[in-house]
Length: 161
Image (cartoon, rainbow, N blue to C red; front, top):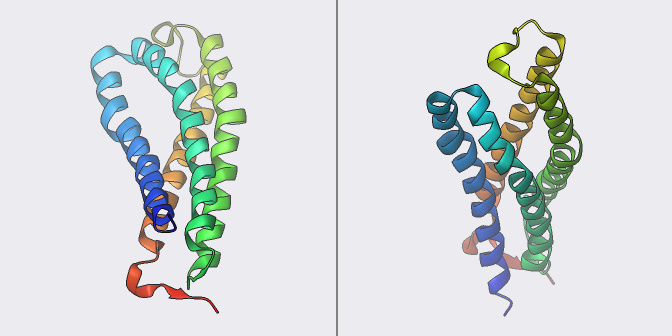
């Protein structure tokens, strides 16, 4: 049973990073290219309320599984891993509980983007939150990538006394 936790930790990291790449680089660009801004925003408005909690749950699960997987193993990069995991939990929570709800509220205020000037203050504020959200997503992807890179390999693990 002990050997299952490193595997589950790696699967969790893979689901986290894969989900973010799939949404950020595979799904949304063609939506905005082919559907136009308003229809694509409507579709992503259906996806993101599921996606952001998904990311938050995976970051928390990764932290939990790392603790189970490597509690009795000397891990050289333990501080870096824990720092990335805790930082990712905070970022994912801020994204889910603060950034996304504010962006959604602003998107609703804008209404139809095609009919709203780019200089409209509410649209500009939405753009700011959208940019912050993209930045957070990028940081979370980089964090997941770093965690995958730092995952201890069998040959690096040593039993602690």
